[in-house]
Amino acid sequence: MPEKPLEEQRQRIDKWLFFARLTKSRSLAQDLVEAGLVGINGHAVTQPGRPVKAGDRIEIRLERRDVVLIVRDFAERRGPASAARLLYEDITPQQAPLTAFERALRKPLGGQ
Image (cartoon, rainbow, N blue to C red; front, side, top):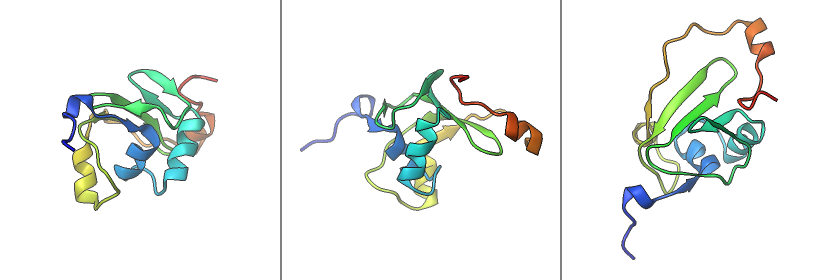
């Protein structure tokens, strides 16, 4: 079966985060999404099954910093870090590391 063009491909956000090596496990990726700490194209996402496509802007609130990525490709499985790095473009603005107090005040992307 021929592979779909990149523009038509989709992948669940939890799988993509795991395959791109942004989380250590798929269940941790699901937890991150369900906690409201992941946004797609400026909208908070709470469903791990939400599909992403090439060109989508992913915003992730990690414990120590925020990450902004553009989806560039997809993978069928989790591979080495060098291959995972090709799945996205990191457009995170330069920022100072968060203090413990700032980390304690963090809220989900939806502002709940």
